Length: 194
Image (tube, rainbow, N blue to C red; front, side, top):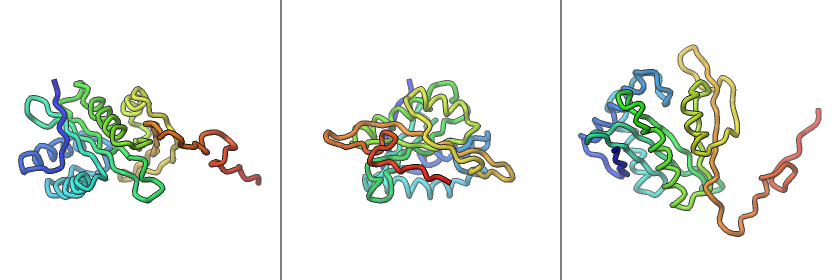
């Protein structure tokens, strides 16, 4: 049974394990934000940034451990500006190729959603490459819905892929007025003619 571990620090052994996940996912063609497998120094620098955000309360970072070794990772980060502080973006969901089929991606995403909901966030968002049908189906099965698609917005060498945005409402505080939840509502904008 995989074990989830929430990190705020990472020693050298853990950094090596996380690097192996990132490196091998990218080497296998995973769409996780790198053009080529990153060095351990690059992954360690990324970890330094996100783990500082965890300690500051602006992120969460989780690993899934199988037989004592990190085999999947994922994170959420709080929205950057004041009007987005109520939402998180789920990022960097990766399961080592040798651990595929164990349900680690689902375990990590669901844990991040549950953690963000428990922390009081209202919306979880994520982006996914348009040809990553397995990930899209996984996110939909958890409750995410597509809210936008930018054609050919992800560049990998000379190839372009759609950037698909998905969201999941986590719950709103009592008394919250959802002005943008219906066409013509106070939070919407009328379509322009011509």
